[in-house]
Length: 376
Image 1 (spheres, rainbow, N blue to C red):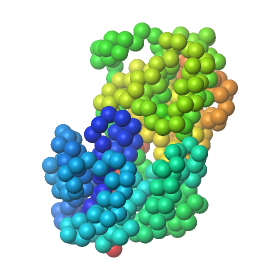
Image 2: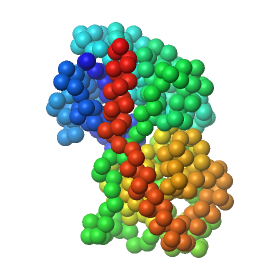
Image 3: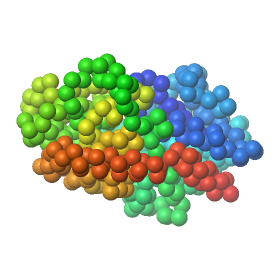
């Protein structure tokens, strides 16, 4: 079987595109490489900038334009007009669209991964262009696809309810924390703390700054307990979109040096950030999967997250969950974990065990099974 993967969101530049779906594509391709049968091959449609990166496996057959296609308009046009012809010439049997959309005129079976349906669940939290693009092309892509991949059972339910896809056409392929996400301790952690100038304990949140992450609620909850705790609050992630409310809340609360924005953090540095934190908080309004809480658990950090969408499915009983818009409940949960070492120790133990249930090898195996079903 010859498998094509539309990998143009393999971003190579720091920023929000290097998080989330870019990491999904990168880790999935790496895991697929080890699960191919002798008569399987992988065609990766990506620009030369991605192919030049050290993580790009030379065994992957790269095809596509020489220039980057990270700009949404150029990428969408290339995907829908040029890629079908390339797939025909490359004799691809199954073409995978790993980010909600696949070519509608593909000459072969298609598989599409749906990460979330935020554009339907939270339409006012996305820029208009992004919302319209996904509204038009995701619905058409899943109807055309031979198989649809959902990154969680929650996302599968959304696809059935909101897009009308039969449940038997959908395979759930959960994400995983990379093996590099493990506790950083001892001298390595001390060096990291010194390099970052960290002198006080801190609470961490990781993710692109955008409305769905619900960071104003986290800021207000932290402000409620700041006088009782020695901790700072660190928000690690690139500037995304529609961030006015976040910055206005920051100015109004006036937390001073108790609040730190790191900007984009490279994946290689994230395990140290997670490991150094006393608590990880992720109050998102909606997630298709929610990778940061799983990464935090893999690093041994206690987790508090929302009780909505896929997040309870990811953390299980290894994290505390609260209603995402209840800042008092969030503040009380933070107070409990930070004020009681026994609760933190129990969550660390549970989180480390929970994270072991997810692996990219499992994701790749489930994805390969969907490719074979699609190809017939």
